[in-house]
Length: 218
Image (cartoon, rainbow, N blue to C red; front, side):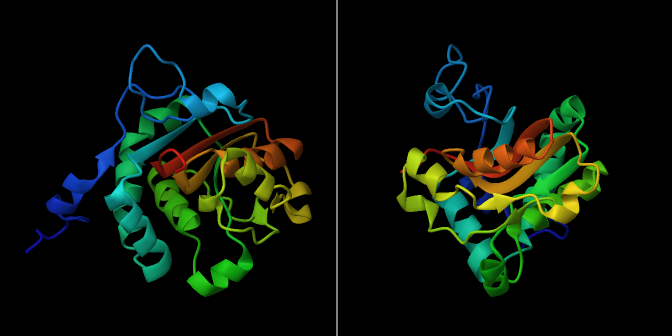
């Protein structure tokens, strides 16, 4: 029996691959050598966002966990990820001092089917721990794009063109100048890049990100 109070069983934790140093100074992916400064993706592509961090390498166990959250309503898994990320990335947050956490939005059609946005659920858990407001309406998804997993880096970014927007209601107010985007999976960086471009075009000065998983596109 699992001890009372634990959010995940020890056997499941052992299957997860936590990201360890050395990491890419831009996207936070785990690197093979400490003589590298950036991963292959960040060396090839200019980024608009400042930097980001991820908790897990995207292995089979992480894939199964993310699938269960999104398609089997296992939102309780986010309690574990939210707690661990809140502790692990506290120094990162203290250093950059963001004014808001902004979840990467899902299209309303997908949200209706799923019933929630996993990125927003995760952001709210971390927001409580860090006492940072979560701005769930600062960024909206205006285009229900094709699945990203079948596309390469260039195709993913093109697929996301004009997929995000800062709504007029948010533009009327004073936008936070330093924000952290929150998402579940980071691969090529196209989603974070597309969100960053829209936010900076609207007046946000610095954009960072946090994700549960990171990995290279297959």
